[in-house]
Image 1 (cartoon, rainbow, N blue to C red):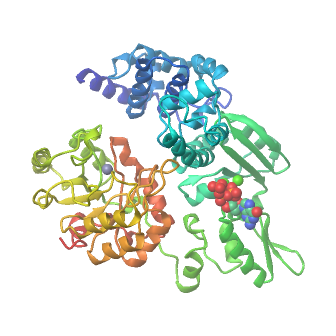
Image 2: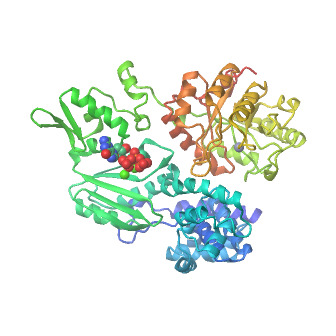
Image 3: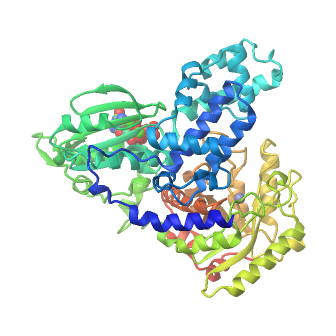
Length: 607
Ligand code: DGT
Ligand code: CA
Ligand code: CA
Ligand code: ZN
């Protein structure tokens, strides 16, 4: 461990010397770097595909563990290899994984992966998106029934062929059928965080094209929707051809669907679609407004234009009587013709924004990441986290936070080594000690993420919870219970005097698991009555509460706490996804409890 740490430190200092400003890179020799995330993703994909070939489990585990380690590394594999570091010195990286990393960095691909893809089509990976269908079962479907797509699987289930396989049954077949629609949706819409990764790469790629005057990423991505169906890229330029040529060279493009005079659509190798529009500079604002949407927002904008004797489309604003172009260069110009302010893209859903414009002097200032002072949900090595209390605290300080709460799991979550009362009290002693030794005002709260048991009781006794600074209640088990039972469990937790907040209140996992059946109106009422807080979990997989619930909670006057639920140091960076979602819920800093210092935040609670 000691040696790993010293290597990491040395490389960090090395790297800053090595770093070359992107602008200095020659366009022709420039290629997208092989990021740690991309390496990890490729290793995962290799392991997943190997499953279908019946490769031995030990190797698969090595690739998956390696991928996890690489995702957590503070330094890039690429620069480590560049400076001749031996990757196998890192914990959890063996010869095989190190070799794969080298091949990926040097060639941009893996020959083994290419080989497998000749016999196993990539579409089988969609099967892995079916909830409760593990890799082993997915492989059996492929090997024994030759199923390679979700559609084929649906047909086979309907013909009752699946239940005949060993290890399957009528019940499994039913669950698979139910899960297929979730998996189908998952292969169509990607998480915002993933879209954001593509956006950064594409922005970088297009920055090397001199003909690009302005570039913006519109559509649901710009509105910050939690999942994105396709990406809408908008560019202003005088040279459409050169821009489209350069766009066509973006790494990862599988097929060009169409290329016209102003529009070009491509599909990436993973099927994700990108639409590009190239417009003249004087239309950029009009096009940006148009392609940002939402459709509902645009409908109202067009209606207002008509009433003023104007017409709006992606090219500009025109007078209806003589068809004269009057505006279009910026969004502000276009909105101004309707006496409207420039709405934050996250609010353009035709929900509250037009009322605000009518009733308020100024639009509300939505919450920003710099408003956040504390993060009140995170895990450590005591349970399923990967960093110690002190490491999490140091990382939170680096990110400008003033306080955090350590909230490891309670004992019911046995697979995460959840804490019983004794271990928890021991952890709190340690926190007291760390706080005492701190030389700044940074505060670590003694917290717990306590499970709401299937019976409705709390997983830890009241006398333990009473000693906490901060108690989160979560419902991880019994999520299939009927609506009333789940609602009662959550309300029961809200009525417990020691509970401060309900975490991820609807339990959804985007593209993976629908929310549990819960009466949110009853939950809001109980939270209000008991003066409790509700979480906006910032994990890009959860984003729970959703935008509509956030706006409802705001109307009830329930303070929201935006937390990362970090299980590793880097997880703290997920705060920005929570902020996006909060803005979609039209929250201002005043609506968000952890924009207050802890002393003031505490006063929001009855306790
Ligand atoms: P997505 O891609 O499903 O996540 O959602 P959006 O909102 O990005 O939808 P998309 O890609 O179909 O279109 C991007 C924006 O372009 C949309 O928000 C509004 C605008 N737009 C697209 N098609 C139409 C249309 O037929 N009428 C109007 N008024 N606007 C449209
Ligand atoms: Ca879109
Ligand atoms: Ca589109
Ligand atoms: Zn948690």
